[in-house]
Length: 552
Image (cartoon, rainbow, N blue to C red; front, side):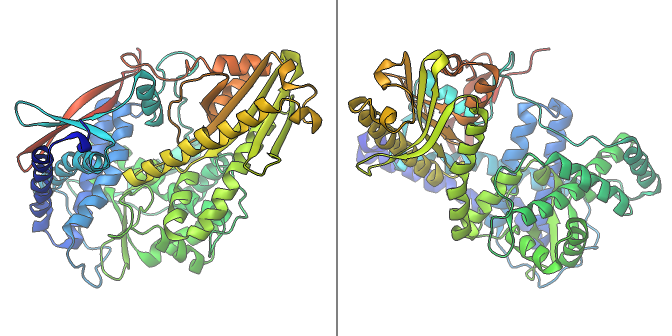
């Protein structure tokens, strides 16, 4: 039942359980350490768990991918909960040793974060009447999300699940493969590396290897940034941020690979050394030399990407973690940088830190998507940005394919990928407006005035004289299931681009797309299970999506 459907006693019972669960934040194990020690310890414990997931499930597995995503949120959450006053300055080169005590403390608090996160995700939506609850015989509170089979498929799709077989399966991420000369350089570095403790090592930085890795990532990222690199983000441009990002990615990739090779050479995984701790000045120097940016600009970007308690807890966005009050010593866990997305990250960072710059990016992103689509649709008759006579809205895209007697009339929506429950609610509100107001307005007008596009010389015939007229909302990064009806539907932009590449005619592309065979299937490609989370004696059950194992 929704909250508004429950009795006052039932609401009080569920709210009382929420307050009881909140007390888990008062008993975190890492509070026994000094704040600068606990921050390093939780980052290192996260790296330890990620490496364990890599060894157990493999790099291409959903479990490994989920570990990086989730731990990237849990670490800053724990740092925020622990609070405490950092010292004014700490020595970046001071020894930091991984041992059984630190491992147990870090793993215990990460487990608490894992369980408490289920409360953080479920209760706010329950308070807003977006999820149902029921209480089991053992007093466990189960949170249930409304939705049919298609809703579940779309939810799974947006969590990254894809069909595990066939043409729609997930494409492997592009990775940088070292050349033979780079492998030789890695080996020379490892031959000269020194063990500092059973779980640590030290090696000499190689500018030659770093430069080659930077150049390799530059080539890899050439097609990744879809927006104009000249867009100003305040004190630096999108292109300048890309150069910085390429630099930090190169440094992290080298460190991560050296840690792996050290372990493969017969040593224990170097947890003591896995988190990169450097003086802020050293970070700025290395990244300025690599990227060619002025040190002052590099320092500004480092500031923008430094986590503190009021920023969104996600190390994919804010990878620099200060170990002192002056932010003169910064720690980076390489795994989160390597798992991050260039374009997605700067969008989100700007949305929080520089709303004006984000508005420029937002205005640019639907133009970018439109240009992508127009490029793929070049073989057809294409027009865009057509105002309706009454000024109520505009038609974003009109595509005509006379050969298959088909017309597509589309609205384009590129929402910011939601992370928090507030962002999900806002994205859904905007999406609903796009479907229920904008697309419906366009369809009603075109249905009542089928000659409009012909009179404007945008298509060659009256809409009544085409065999197929499609009204579509084309979305990127967020959308929800809308049952296709009366030639109206919602589709994912990237899937549309893919179908246009594989089908000659507009009608064949859209009719195949609207079968939605590209959505993952429950029981084959993913499973939904009710997971139990328990803190402070309170138990809740929430729906969790699990990827199916890849076929052998």
